[in-house]
Length: 138
Length: 138
Length: 138
Length: 138
Image (tube, rainbow over all chains, first blue to last red; front, side, top):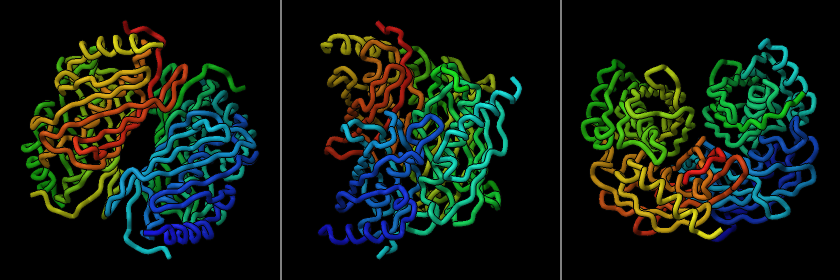
């Protein structure tokens, strides 16, 4: 498979994904079962300690998961996701999420997503398990 | 301990938590090691499938975790969180998150957060582990 | 559904499950989507700190999961499991694992398993996600 | 730090770890914050489907975690562990677990453990979070 289908699936997803747009996510690279995306942390994304709300980091990784696990044009739903928070993220930090495919099963898939900041320091590690519905997205 | 300290800690947190404010979170009940909060899903919180972005559900639960695990005035940081997505959430749905304390250790804590919709159907189950720094918040 | 099928599925599983036999698991109660089992910690189950090896606690919970998620005679496979360790377990302790069904989907299921000791103290909390194959076990 | 302390900590742990001995674990390589170990699946380690009990795979990874996270001679306790099961393991299969350090904090650590079989196929992915007590082991 070329990367034409993965790219068009992600373009379709991103166009309809209101919250990923609010997050300011930019697509860097899409390949079959893979995604790499970027965002910048804004003040409205912080928590009561003035650093990134954990949910923002999770959301960013969850979008990377969606862009990786759906991109063979097989509509997939996240079943279980977990995240380890390693390092605080501050306003103005640029984050990169890279999703790699650990398992590509017929009915399920497992993805590992690493999130790093502009200094190449890992700030979180995310793992997601999805169910494949077999339906097309585009 | 009365509920005076927990309530004042959460009021302080909520006042400074820009993203929880963006989510529209309302505090329903706060007790020592416990929180119950509410929010309504808006269109800008949806993903490419026009249902709640998984990150929104996680963020909501993560705020409930923060309000429960910090409220003895012991500043606590989430180490690891996981979530199972059980049911789709649609625009206009009212969500309730209830955080209960599974373990209250000196250095760490474990919390289970159940998220339900306005029909009392569970839409997600979240578990969070935190580290207690021993510092005061207020 | 009566509890006849769940009980016969679990009897079949237990009869063929060599490691659950090694663990000394006893079935206490089986209902549709539910199991309650018991075991006693032996010296050969300890780790380098002379308390229960984490893998023993996990294994015990994982058997409770299998007995709960398969017992509608729908062969199910664990996809992702996580466990929080709350309290040490010592040689001679009697453990109870109780598996309750959080979600019973057509293709997947989610179960929460609480493990307590003989003093009714919770020693671990386990969550498991399974995939349902649709095949019969008995 | 040379690898002398890590090796002597793991030798001490392994000598006292009755269950890791029962599993037949062999140490392949130990470095600071790292471990690589091996075992062979025996019939008594199988579940009701005649493949490796999930708890055996978890236990093997959990031992790799212990050997990696304790080996700076800082006694560490697992708080939360999760595992994704990717591929069945059969009697006679030789498994390798490799633990790598994702985060080495003062009070906590995060480790990723990959488990592969004799055909270099990944059979499971495990993530563990530990709390560092600051006590010595040897």
